[in-house]
Each structure stands twice: as C-alpha cells, then as structure tokens.
Image 1 (cartoon, rainbow, N blue to C red):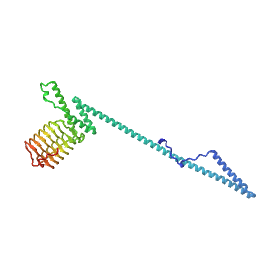
Image 2 (cartoon, rainbow, N blue to C red; image 1 turned 90 degrees about the vertical axis):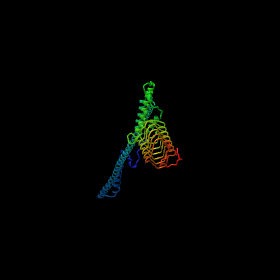
Image 3 (cartoon, rainbow, N blue to C red; image 1 turned 120 degrees about the vertical axis):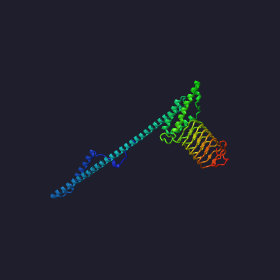
Image 4 (cartoon, one colour; image 1 turned 30 degrees about the vertical axis):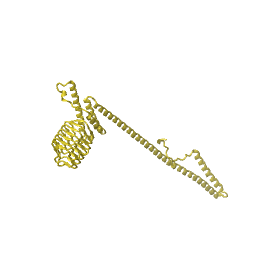
Length: 402
C-alpha cells in the first residue's frame, strides 16, 4: 500500500448514526399513539368507575389530559432524540470534513515532498552529468594538448603549450600536473642551433637543421616564460600557487624567474645557457642546484631560501650574486666552483653554511654577511690559495654532511 492509499484514521466521534427509515418513524408514531390511547382508555375507565355527574366529567377530563400528556411527553422525548441525532450528525460531518481535509493536506504534503525529492535527485543527476561532461572535455583537451607537444612541427607544439596554459588557468587541480608536463618537456635532450649551419656555404640539410633547432628554442623559451608568468604572487589572477619544479638535467636558456614563489625545486645538473636570474625568488621548500652549470651570470639577489639549499659541486663560470639573500635553513656549497667574483654581501645565513672545498678563482665578498650557525670553509681556496675568512667558525677538518 502506498502513502497515497493510506486509510484515514478512525474516530468514534466522527461516526455517523444510521439514518432513520420511514418504517422506523411510522413505528415510533404508532407506538406513541397506542401508548397515548392506552393511557387515556385505562384512566378513562378505571379512574371514573363509580362516579356520576360532575365528578365523572372531571375525572374523564383529567384522564384525557393525562393521556394527552403522556403522548406529548413521548413526542418530546422523540423530538429530543431527533435533535440529539441532528447535532451528532452535524458534528460527525464536521469531524469527517476535518479528517478529509487533514488527509488531503497529508497527501498534498507527501506529493510535494516526493516532487521536491525527485527534483533534487534530478538536479543532482544533472549536476553529475554536467561535471562528468566537463571532466571528459578537460581530459580530452589535456590529452590533445600533450599530443601536440609530441608533434614534429614547432607551431603545433606551441599551440599545445598555450592549450595547457589555458587548462591550468581554468582548472586549479590540473596546475601541478601541467607544470610537471612543462618541466618534463624542458628536461628532454636538446641541441642549440649552430650559427655555422646558416652561413654561406651551408648545405640545405644544415639550414633545415638550423631552422628546426631555432624553432625548438622558441618553443622552450615559451615553456620557460609560461612557468615564470604563473609563479608570481603579485599577479593574483594568474598566480598558480607555490608549485614544485623538477628541471633536473634540463638545458635552460636565459632562464628568468624573478619575484616568484615556488615550492620544493630541483635544478640538479641543469645547464643554464645564458644568464640565470632568480632575483627576489622565494623558495618555500628545499631547493637543489647540485652540479648545476651557470654558463653566464647567476643572480640570486634578495632570494629567500625557506628550506635547505644545495649547491653541491655547482659551477659558476661568470659572476655569481647572492647579495642580500636569506638562507633560513642550512646551505651547502660543498665543492662549488666560482670562476669569477662571488658576491655574498649582506647575505643572512640563519642555519649552517658549508663552503667545504669551494674554489673561488676570483673575488669572494662577504661584507656584512651574517652567520647564525656554523660557517665551514675547510679546504676552500681563493685564487689557488687557502681561503680562511675571519668569520669562519668551523673546524678545518670538518667537511659537512653530504
């Protein structure tokens, strides 16, 4: 039985009395008449027995009155009974109407609840369908964009990069994944164009190779720029958050990442072709530049290292600037090589600073630098001579953790 077919609750007060049939009414009238006549006859004869003249007349009149009184009284009782039935019927009708209205209200409320539940369910189904459609569309766009990156045509690869950028801009959950894809693309092996391949006398094959490598360079520069553009907190509408970068083994060209805020980062064994600029960058996690090669100037001016910083065996072939850099964790420059001047003026080393076996071929400047932990320069050299700065606090035999 459904809710709509529920029987109405029973109530004794709402039950209607059985209707009086004409036969019952006529029977009642006849009974009253017989009782009245019987009373009159009985009193007429019994009460007047032995009376004469005026007494007889009075006695018979009294008998008639009493008989009629019995009839009227019986009629009154019947009238009261009929009045009671009418009142009871009226109350029963009202009670039945109220119950009917209550039942109708319950049915209506139930129907409304069913309709609301059905509507909510339909909305959820529609929302889920829309979400599924959007997710499928996003996945299709993502797969198509990644496929474009594998094209042998540079314009198609550029289109794939810009498609990925739009996806990341509109889908926050995809940003780290798309950054990973860009980093993976930059990690792939690449040879720079050789200027000799476009000079007079170069073969058609050489010229084609030069054009292909030049176009690939533009694709890579675009990927680098996309990373830099979306890691700056100052641009609220385009900032993707402190995402992690893994560019291990990549070849980066004139890499610029200024005023950025990034998470844990890996630049191990990276070759920085051209200048490398990390000015005012905040590294929110640990950062690794182990065995990285800086072919031209390297700038970490006012960079902030929130975690540990590793520059183990890094090579700086031109000037390296760490002026006003802040190292909150430990920093390792173990076996690093500075071919030109190394600037650490006003740098702040909160943790330990390890410069074990560092080679300073040019000048090493630490004016107004502050060291909160140990500063180890064991076996460090400057211009081929032992380098023992007056602020060094570590034992000459210490090599530091590797």
